[in-house]
Length: 128
Image 1: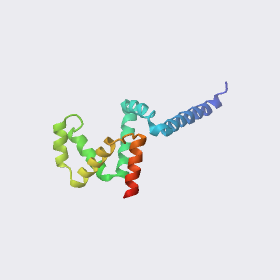
Image 2: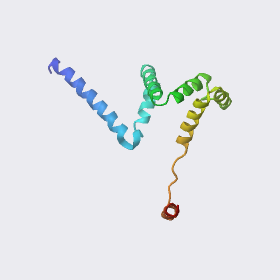
Image 3: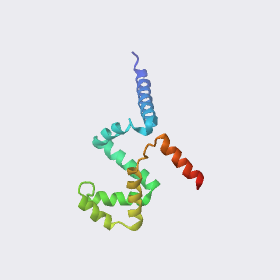
Image 4: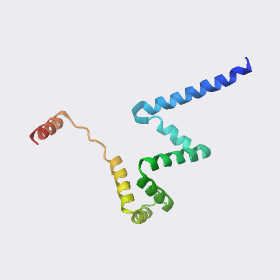
């Protein structure tokens, strides 16, 4: 085998790996990619890089939530509810609102409705 083909094989392998990540990210909103990323977060070098990238993305999308998350992590709010309550009292009003919106939005899952419930809801909407 010729040595000049090794970089080609490495590039092909990288393309396949990134393609697999892209495919897994598209399927069911990244449901199958999430466990892989959680495993990669445990690897020290990759974990720090992924954490910094996610923090940067959060700061770009919602700066108040990002600052609140940093404060909550510093206070150790993830492990003890009492510390979490104390840390929440130290947040500003905008940060507290951002945290509440983020937590409440993720907890409220849509309730599946049967046909009778959907019809009743449609009739109520038509009356309004």
